Image (cartoon, rainbow, N blue to C red; front, side, top):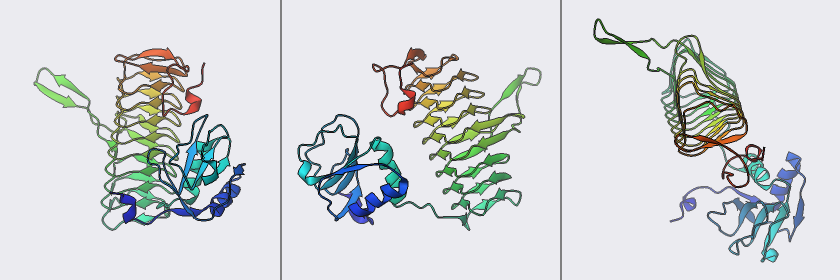
Length: 326
């Protein structure tokens, strides 16, 4: 069954796509006949005719791509060029994403507080922010153009900076767990968690992300431009640098420090108080138990070992800037 048959399509003429490239100031060259029928953004994982695709490097365009637009860097090989309108740019994937941002359907203009949301009178919320259905906002600061989708919980002492998007069922400023055993009274004495949480500008948090507040006077911090995918957990007092990326179900413990542009593979774990330098890549499923002061390195395994990033251990999905040889 094709699910896209049930929903409105994001279709664009070739002329509109070229106009968008001009608007974005992107340099390009074209090859092929301009066909002004409608096209949709599509993936090479699910090839159909009438698509807009991107291809990077010296790869062969699949024969099944026909009557389509292909954005590539001039290295792609095309055996059925007569049925393809080619747009040659320097960075095909980047251009493809920019075009999607410019043209594709997105609910980006929503704002206001949904009537089912519960918001504390002590909360500060910018007029352009969106608080979705069944959200709970305690004494927190919600910045400009912040989007909280349904069932997000924002606890006390949480500051969410501008242009951040938080998907459903995530909790920010959750209570951490720290305790000491009272031998005399034979009870567990829990430490009150009274710290802060700071989410930087232009951060994306996926569904079911939990961020624990700082335990005393520290802030748990997510740096600007970071992307935290679904199911990830961040412990109390952890500090993430700018533009970090977490794949699904990453778990970092309390007081971990991650450098700028750290890339955490799916299911990876970092033990408490570990420090990792800038531009490091943590492989999927790895468990980091020791500090890493060598920037731009790869850590893989259980326990994770440090390796130099080169062409033999480059990871798919890691930004190119993080996989250059050092």
